[in-house]
Length: 108
Image 1 (tube, rainbow, N blue to C red):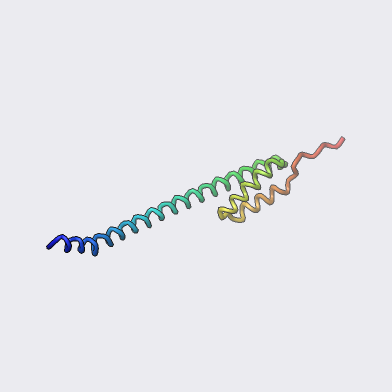
Image 2: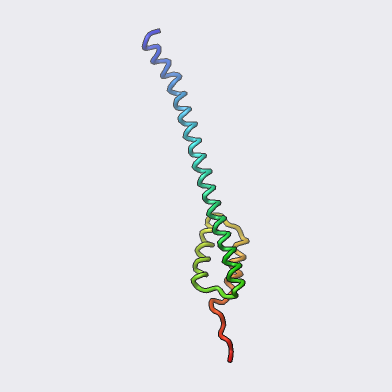
């Protein structure tokens, strides 16, 4: 076997095998990154849901829903919804929207 035969074998077998291995590694890396991205997305969604639940409990108990709180909850809800959030949180936000922004004045 001469050097040209060896080069031909490398080109015919080793290069395609190396390319296949590299492609398999790249697919594995992409899959790993997608899984990590999905985990982060679901984690952020869970944190936003929890924070909206806490806000709902707090402001429904107080009976007042200040403007600054409305703005915060609206922004959290917008991002929660963009991440694929469901209608349960929508109902909580709508319920809070029914609250006044300030406590009423007592009558004399």
